[in-house]
Length: 400
Image (cartoon, rainbow, N blue to C red; front, side, top):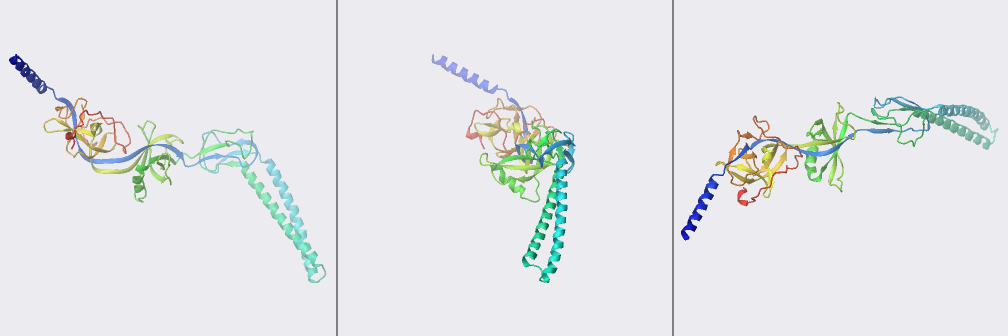
């Protein structure tokens, strides 16, 4: 019986050894970590904010008699937009002119009388009170003439307001009031809205933990912070501009601060109030260790890569990752240039597993020829990429 048990144990041991020896190596793709540059950007959602949006309101009351623009037309500053019936203001001006003529005649008579009273006063031939009263009469008539002239100036201004012109250059929107309507100063929403198309700005926010780096570059007079606008899918570049203004306070509810970038927008690709994705280039890391983004995994050990050993085995290697451009990721610590990492075929790998390289070694440098690594999905380079599979063995012995 003892002999039978010994034979059974030996049989199982031999079979287990053969199974381990016969385990095939996992076919993987690898890449070599290299030194290179990496732009450090902040990716945020922004809104196209025109430099000027003007709602043209009437400044007096009257019937709208004409409109001098086509909907969607580009206009220049001072260009005719609409006409309010000016007849009532012309009549009022004529009445003021008549009153002025009358008061000027009265003033002339008063001054003539005053000249005569002066002579009589010098000859002691007129009472002192009569002389003083005449001086006051002249002053009153002079004030009346000044008031008449002010009234005429007001009616001239009203007539100018009847001829409505564009206060800024830009593009008019859809017509809000048709000719024939009676408009007033409180007419809402106005006659038309003018929006400047070019240049334009994009307003966005950055979190407070990123503000210090932005401020350091923004305060540098010799530094320019490029801003790139992308479409809503974050796949197509729309325009490039630069940061030109920061808000003066932090929003307590969100912990963010408003920033504004300016764009020439010559092709008018940025449309007012459009939502766009923006990338603000804060800095460029030089001589950084780069690996293809698919090589970076996240799991129980934290962020890690499968490091290829000289004996064609892999080990779980903990790293600290930095910015990413989607295709490549910066390794801040835990990896050196020249070391090889697995970029594809990690699904069945474990610490110490045997591997077989499927193809020629590839470089993490995006400019290197022959690299066939597929770029990862684009995202904010201010945040490390996630989504790697979890590793089952979080052994501290595998970290370096």
